[in-house]
Image (tube, rainbow, N blue to C red; front, side, top):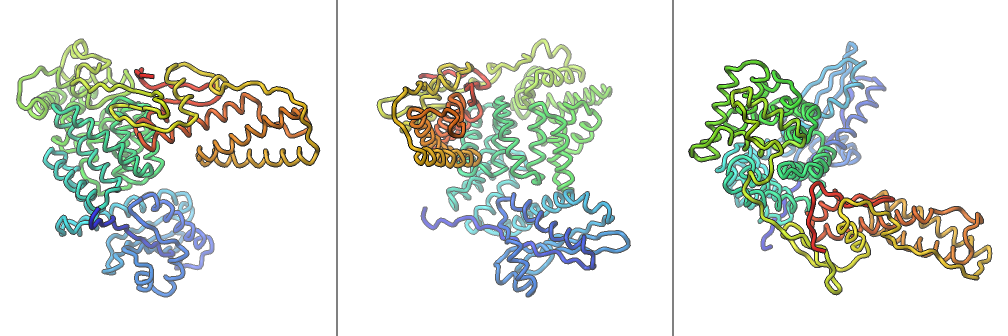
Length: 601
């Protein structure tokens, strides 16, 4: 791309914290505290952390030298002071160029508890720090013209528009994300942003463009993860999208990964709280929602729109009401519906009825564009845009709306929410078959041609026998070795044994690192050696006992299948993701998707 400008990284140097009191325990604590800060801050991919070894040497020479020598954008400074059995921790974020303090915080704790709350302080500092840096960059970028922006600036400005929750702001956000891709065509976060603009239209606003927006949300999320599978926001967005596609098991895989990759991003946590409630883990949703509030005490009011569902599904009616009432009532169409159900369960019929009427009227205005409709249609829509994995959660929502005044709604609404209640989805032919020397693979409308690997035959068998357990030896199609008269001398046997042990160690290491291609190479050589030695002398207890034939088949088939899926993922990320979640390997292997899949084989 001509004149391409790659997104500028944000460099942060964490200086060694000063200990103003001669307290050996505290000095040890201060050093460990800084190391933990650096480790947790490194989870934010927009931040480039300068190592503590570099900052230690430079900080001795002075702060100005740190800035000039290391070329950082921000400095994080801190100190510990022990006095009267109390420990005071002071932390400051400094703009390195202007040398002014952007953010500062002070923590006062007793010497007995400072070690106990260490992790809690780290979480609060890390969560707040990243947001303060983003706010600082955003305030600067908003003064620039678009042509002067870098990719990360575009992401921040686009995300600010996404928070507004309107069709107009979604379009403005998409413009910024598209600009980011012009600056950096491989910027995964920009595809995530575009996915979110389609997702908002799909799930909340443009009901009459269901297919277009669903496709746009999904395809851009797939692109984002294909470019960077370690971006926690991209993983969260994919999880949300799969929830709304009602592919809950696959969704949970991405939600868990998002949480593992970064457990301290408050904006991400608050969205995860809603997602986990949808898959039947409302208590975890409540925990993450409260953690987000703690990490970002100056959060926007849109946070509360995500918090009502976890409290509601966990039957904490008053907390659901208190949370939902703090959100702007117009931010989502279904918010008044959940407030109506919450008030109904809490026993306040009058307020419940008022919110129910508001919900139906808002649905008629924003979703049906003023056309007349039956109130039960609003409930059907509500269940579609807030899909829940557990049938009892769906029934619980329906009952709450009935109690709020929409009587006998459950008799009209399909409790299992069949797909025919929505605009019909595009049907795709899924293909997995060999054509001469290549394999034709097609899934959800995307087709690719791939060169052969051994694991494709295993996948073919599993797809053919969907949901059936297939023994690994059947996939391996192994034959018993024939006896031969070849004899080894002791030196040869020793050398073979040594090489096989070395290969087993290499194989174990490759499996642990999930390097399936390398592991398959080791496994293939090991199998050849075992077969050769067995034919020649038999094991007979004379050498170290190796894996049984079944165990060797299990390991070989697992490596073959995982290598094949990895190859597919490189050309067809969505199918690779589907197979990763649906194919289980072991002594028995199976292809077990959430719902029945039709394959042309």
